[in-house]
Structure formats: C-alpha cells, structure tokens
Length: 421
Image 1 (cartoon, helix red, strand yellow):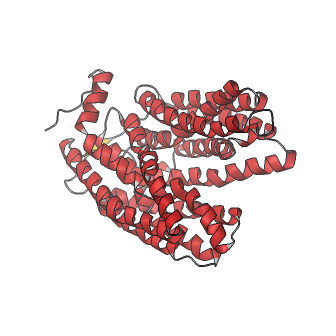
Image 2 (cartoon, helix red, strand yellow; image 1 turned 120 degrees about the horizontal axis):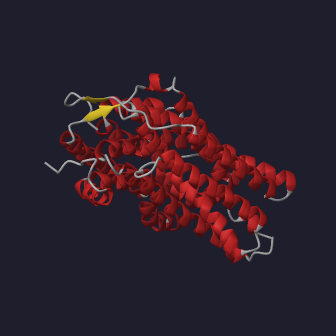
Image 3 (cartoon, one colour; image 1 turned 180 degrees about the vertical axis):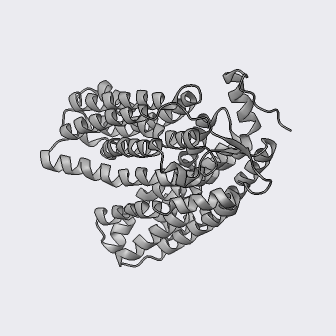
C-alpha cells in the first residue's frame, strides 16, 4: 500500500509525494495522449503542401478538414459515457485502433476532397478516447491533491511526442510521399498508442483500488440542469473564441507595421512559451487557490496582452509581452476545463460531462479564427479584432467568477470492478 494523502499534509510535500506515488499512470497517460488523435493536429502542417501538390486542393480546402473536429466532438458525450461506465481500459485501446484505421483511410484519399474529410472525421471521432477525454479521467481517478498540476503534465504529452515524431514524419513524407506519412501515423497509433493506453489505464486501476475507488458527484442529466454547467459552457466558448482567433493570426498583426519579419515570426515561439508557462503555472495554482479566481487573473492578463498588441505592435518587448499573456491563456484553458468539471460536478460521470463541455471549446476554434479573419478583411488591420478579443476575454473572466464556491460533493464507495478506469 502506498501512503495515503492527508488534507493536513503540507501542500509542497504533497505534490512530490503524490507525483512519486502516481508517476506511472501520469507518465503513461501523457505518452498515450501524445500518440493519440492529437498527433494529427500537431503534425497537420507537414501534409498541407504535399496534398496541394498532389490534388491541386487549395489551402482553405485542406484546412477545412479540421472542421471535422466540430462534428466529431458532438460524439464526445457518448464516448465519455462509455468511459464512465466501462472504464478507460475498455475504451481507449479500441479508440487507438480506430484512430489507426482513420490514418489508413487518410492515406488512401482520392482527388475527391470528401474522401479526405471522411477520413479525418473517422480518425477524430474514432480516436476521441485517445484525447484528454479519456486520459484526464485517469488523472482524476489517481490524483487527489494535485490534479491541476498532473493535468498540466498529462496535456504536455502531445507537445513532447510531436517534437520527436515531427522530423521523422517529415522525412518519410519527403523521401516517399504523404501517403507513407499517414501510414506511419497509423503505425504509431496502433503499435505505440494502443499498448500505452492499456498500460496507463492499468496503472490507474491499481491506484484506484488502493484509494478505495471513492467516487462522488452528479450524473450528466443532473449537471445540465445546474447553472454552473451553463456558465462554464459559456465561459469556455468566450475564452476560446478570442484566444484561438488571435493565436491563429499571431504574427500577422506585426507584419508590415514596422516590426522586422524575423521578429514577427519570433512571436510564434513566444506564443508557445506562453502556452507551456500558462499550462504549468495554472495547474500549480488551481490546486492551491480557487480555480475560477485563477482563471479570472489569467484572462485579465490576456486581455491586457491583446490591448498591448493593438496599441504597441512596433515595440518588440511590448509585443512579446502581449503574445506571452495570450499564450498563457491558451495553455490554461484545457487544464481549467478538466479541473473545474471535476471540482464542480465530481467524477461519477466526469467523462460524459467533460465531453459535453468540449463541444463548446470545439465550436470556438473555427468561429474564432474565422471571426478574426473577417474583421481583418473588412478593415485591413487587426486593431478592431484585438479590441473585441480583449472585451471577450474580460467577459469570460466575469463568467468564471459567477461559478461560486466549490460544492460539497457526495462521496460513495464503488463496487469493485464497476469503476475500473
């Protein structure tokens, strides 16, 4: 038996104690996530030019395939329900195999654009349980005191594996073709993602047993009648709308306005630094402070960052500060969604609830990028878009404040085997 965590234990000691006790499910979940559906989003840009050259599709047509995420996310509440009932171990390995099938379909796409779109839909929907939808459930089951920080570590798995696989996939595409690149991704999903998902859920099974499989909270049908759920749903949307919209055009506001092209391109790296910083800093803070208050602080900083970019695009330091603040908000959002779902609604139907909340996030992605593009086209600059983005971030911060105190969740003992994760 691993030593149990006690609420009176000093938080700093608790962090390292809990990480040491649960490093196996944490590490394997992070790697499994990195070998899951996130691979497509992380490495998508490698395939854009080869697909253009092969079929003559436009950049807009190819990028439009990412809209299939919105359709796939509509299935996430049902996938989440399966995870809640059957456990991650029963669902995630099958999902990893479906992801591999989707990559194989993508490798066989014809010059009919719809064939590629269908393949993307299959891999995003079939691989749904290989995202945070599945693996954040493992974190919630195994971590008690430091869920926020553990979620940050788990969510960073996609960045780690993409750094490793990106040059390999790019080399395969260059030496052979884009079809071989998709087949390589299928192999990664099948031969690495599948066993890692089984391994991660197995470690979680052991820890859940040692923790006594304590489960508390509400069913999805109860949660959708609570005002906190719809406040959180709206807060997620109005956070994602400006953060994704501005991030998608991160270097564009600086180009042609006195900032050197190299400095403008540097903002992409600054944004990535902000994402990493925001993810871990937010994860650390929400374990210790009221999470909606942390969200408010991060979003107000992001709003200040948007205003800084709007009024000071010719100063590298000020521009970097603005982009860094926006990156922090982008890095914090997924961590906050998972953590707040656990704290306000509990673990009983967590995956179904999280899957439903992700619909809001998924719809914000295309709307945000499109909205900022339209505003640019209508005015010829990003000034109005940045001002509107700052206003939306402040509004989202206000919504998070409306969530109120954490509820006292009923905690019940699960029957052995019914909540295997």
